[in-house]
Length: 303
Ligand code: PMV
Image 1 (cartoon, helix red, strand yellow):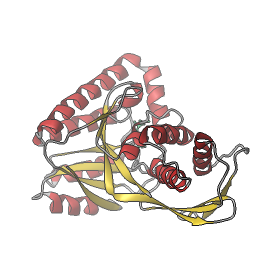
Image 2 (cartoon, rainbow, N blue to C red):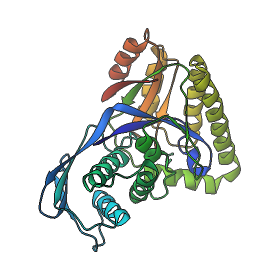
Image 3 (cartoon, rainbow, N blue to C red):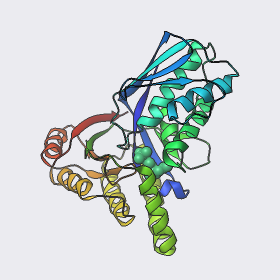
């Protein structure tokens, strides 16, 4: 069982305040769960070299143990004798949704092994509970795009809307190599909002307008129109104080090398940025990002 990474194309941070956001799965980079017979229920987080034991009664702290417990409670089942090993290709704390992806893979593997595979809506609700442990007050966009593995137009507390892609979108995902806390960045935006409500609301509203324009362009296949929208969204995120010198440097390098648009993606302050490219510019933008200090660059196409 597995689940993909994700990136937010437009609308991060503003989505916490009820604005829409657009996110896509990155299916080539995944978290995996494999199941073997065991003694009691053990979760082996191979990348962290941690093994967790799960029962129904204890107050568990580790997010993955909590996820397993939530699945057991949902299915009204005692812990089975299984060891579930989790492995992830998704870098941690970089805005690619590693926490939600690992929890999703685990929930799928455990419920399937118990003979009661969870439907996406139920699984999404459980992964959201786990996301709260990581992020405090997450909007729910990460778990939604990862569980459904489809492009989504997401508005907090609204029914899920998937997005039709009018023409392929090719993106490079450039990693600053700096891990950053989404929780902290979200908290700082909250402080900014409390200190300057009117001007911050103006920025959030403008981001919402960009997301709506982006949705129309994506569905119509007007990929060229997305470049300017990405640039402006990045500037607005700078005003929300969630960019960083490293992110700005990668964004500038991508634009200089011919990307149609570029912006930070996710919580910001570190983590990843994205650049919109064409088959002709992809190689030169890729090289420019590495030259400008990207720790890794992943190419993904949304169809
Ligand atoms: O850092 P990420 O990719 O998990 O993204 C967080 C997105 C925010 O809008 C900043 C927060 C949220 O809960 O939506």
